[in-house]
Length: 140
Image (cartoon, rainbow, N blue to C red; front, top):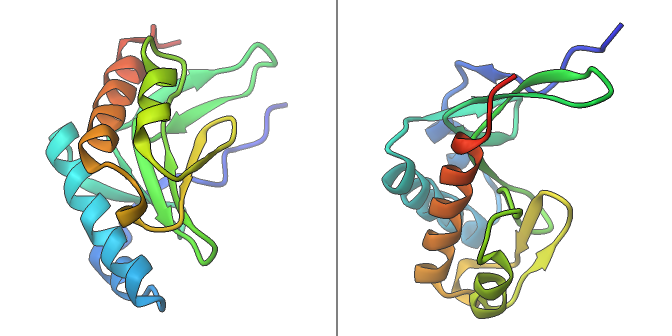
């Protein structure tokens, strides 16, 4: 039996969540990414779990049978970094990544110390392409 995804969309208050971020720089960057993602996606922000701000929703199903819903794009202003949840498997990602500025990557996360470390025009393009790519995938 597949386990239920713990990180689900909910009715949490996005503004209150971001306003509660202790680090002033991370809080300001969180509100800036909120605006950027909302402008790019045209979607209203929603809380996913207790610490992720997401935009839109897509359904996924892995070969293992595990399935669920996740935001099309999202972010979390964590203590150690600003974490963006994006798709990286679209044409042109590597070139955009090289132009972005100071960042780290994992399988599905883009980690930034602060927004001033990156080119916001490139970041906006990464968010746009990630959202388009995620929405273009066949839904299970």
